[in-house]
Length: 188
Image 1 (cartoon, helix red, strand yellow):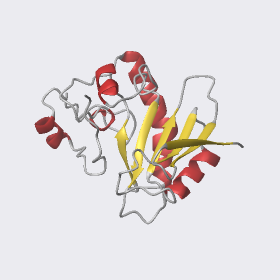
Image 2 (tube, one colour; image 1 turned 120 degrees about the vertical axis):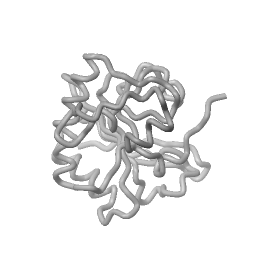
Image 3 (cartoon, rainbow, N blue to C red; image 1 turned 120 degrees about the horizontal axis):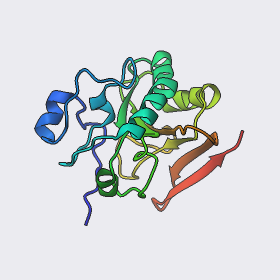
Image 4 (tube, rainbow, N blue to C red; image 1 turned 90 degrees about the vertical axis):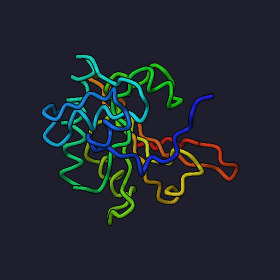
């Protein structure tokens, strides 16, 4: 049975902490995908699995970092943290995600709005919706038991960007009264 990750908010992303958690994590202090996104932040894995992207993934990650992450950071400085960016097949499988997926291609990023932030997830989601080009944009919760999550103001945002044929598909995830994940498409 696969382990279910529930403590996303407290997962450390600092390289010195990551080395202690995952000795296979390749610390690359000098490598960056953009001005503010380091190799370490983009390839963090909470599992004892080597999570290194190849050249095609690095190109996709650089594009996403510069066209989505940097404008978002400029607009909402120090408001959000990255949950997941690149995931190799082994990491994606362990996270119970469909394989293959856009994380494996370096085309997808998940982040959360910090609890102490004065900016709401809805404000960030709305800004992204009106100001960025993307393939998919999803706002919602990850698991119903998450104490940081509510259907009214969920803290998680997922965004993806492909090299071509971006759909501008927008969704809102929520949990129904039975705790089942539901997705609602938002049309422009």
